[in-house]
Image (tube, rainbow, N blue to C red; front, side, top):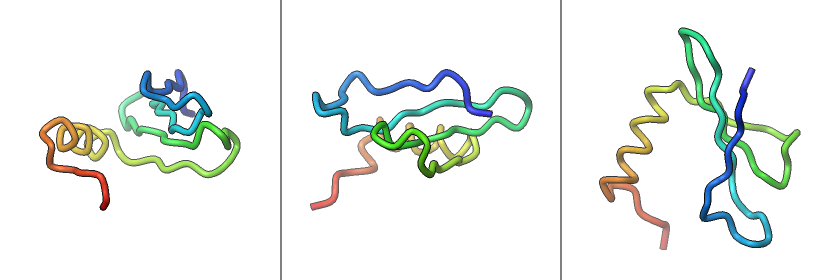
Length: 66
């Protein structure tokens, strides 16, 4: 179960953003969902995949599409 959902401090005033939460325990996963559809689908990458993605964003290796 995903707990402690958080929304970015960069969320647009209209609420267009995603939320991130994490499971507890040994096989941790991230949960990512749309803030406008909290009961809708979510993706759940493993914690290693999520941390890899975050590091690539911080390093500037992931850019916005044109």
